[in-house]
Length: 298
Image 1 (tube, helix red, strand yellow):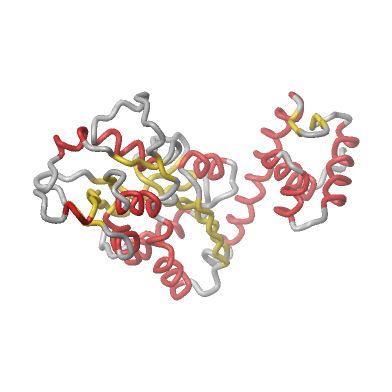
Image 2 (image 1 turned 90 degrees about the vertical axis):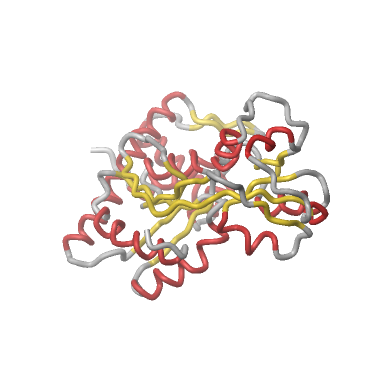
């Protein structure tokens, strides 16, 4: 039987993701030479070249791509086996690897970490902030236990549990404070600043404003809600932000808040995890904590 270790599989997975020996070594908390030796040993054991090494690039070979699929399944199964053992012993949440999207993280995490720490002082909490597509991939790969995202995802194999809904508000320059509120129909005529591609909040805003996603936008995108609000304060345009971001993002910017009359745009926030995750019941028990941290009762 081949002497392949789980450690080698984890090192391989890190290098397959980063495609850079230095970054992968940092991720694994080992030296770059040690990582190189482990990968070379793995390749020699398999009798296969898993990586194509070039002076300025590193990429998976076709066999390496096939191996990654199998290695990912093995690592996910091992993690879930550990989670099952924890559940079987009657303990909960000894470890929680939680993903969260950038348009929620800065406004929810401080209260959420406090709530989780109080309710589960034994929990080793790890937080990962990134955009929804990456969170889905990392959930499916078993690198995360759960994620807080905008719903719906409609992703096979994931359980979606609604947490709360919140309105979007329009942020305008301070000089518009005395102007009449903007209506939904007038939004498409304004210079609307949006998050860069990859953020689900961008897609939600464009859908609400009936903006063609393929229409050229002339560099009006920002990397964060804070950047967008500051751009509004500088008189560049207007933007939409979620209700939870108002206190943090508008306190130091010369802007005003426009709430919509009638039916306002909104988003639904929820927590998702793999249907096969044995931590499912413990994750479900976290739902009230997240709602409380967000100032909602469900």
